[in-house]
Length: 143
Image 1 (cartoon, rainbow, N blue to C red):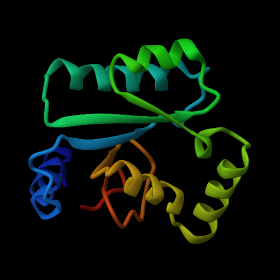
Image 2: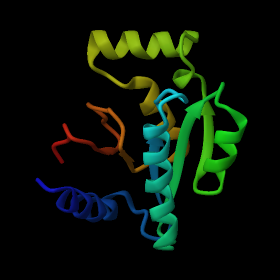
Image 3: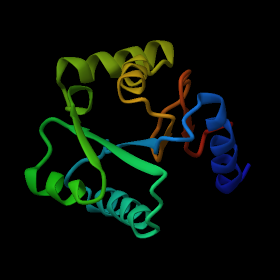
């Protein structure tokens, strides 16, 4: 299934969530090393492209490590709502818990908690599988 078809299916599923009068909250996980400029630039360009289309129905939420470089965070704040979370902070207790639970059960329960808190309908460009409350657009996705 093409990405365009996946996006269309998610957009049609939104009517089931009764969110048509609110912006579609799409979550992104910045789960890459700050030293890997390719990953940072890719995410920056993706969010910049969303900003350029001026689509008021999409509200990107970017989840980052609590230890993110302040200059990098500042760059992303111009493009999305940036939310610092400890489960993306390498070797923190919640990061170890998230990795352990994900490896043992295949579940992303910590991410599911953030879905509920921030009312996220879809995650994009992240390695999330098995989400119960939202769709995930990635290469292993079957929408």
